[in-house]
Amino acid sequence: MRSTLSILLTCCIAVGCMSEEDGSEVDGTMDADTAESGEATGGVSSTDAELQLSGPWSNFPLICRTCSTHSGNLVKLWQSILWADGFFTSTSDVDGGFGPRTQDATVSWQIVWLPSDGGTGKVGRNTWTRASDFIEFESDGDTCHGGLFRLFYRGTHGRVIRLSENCTTGEWRFLNPNTGQFISV
Image (cartoon, rainbow, N blue to C red; front, side, top):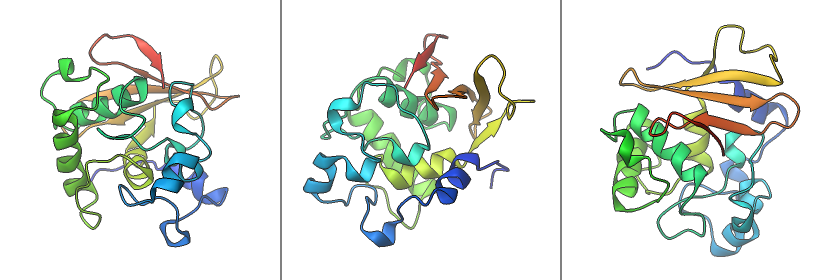
């Protein structure tokens, strides 16, 4: 098991995020009314998906092939995680489209890191929360420098994704391994 600093999950627990027991989204099993209302995604509706997202990753919207959020920078972030963990072999797979390859890689990732949930192929609260367990601060990253916290996702294949979180707004950015450019989530 990887050694990690689970800062985002800790923050989520501290502010009282909803759990699976209270009827909130469980990867791929929430009802259509909850999915459309955005309640299970921390109030982020599918139409807000291209806006900058902030706060704990458990608040990120559900993404999947058939979801209203199935393309864009949030999908690129997820694909970057799949690449970092070796479920994609090439950075060219980080294309922003949640197609069959991303779905299959997601199922494989979930079987490894969320075995009790099974592989749904949908990235929701459980999957985002589990992925956030592998985020660590860079050296002195827990101190706000230039308005940003500096973090990284350390994948299991020696691949790293650099991340930053705005100290004031909580908005996330990541270094796209395909382009080498920071983009907003």
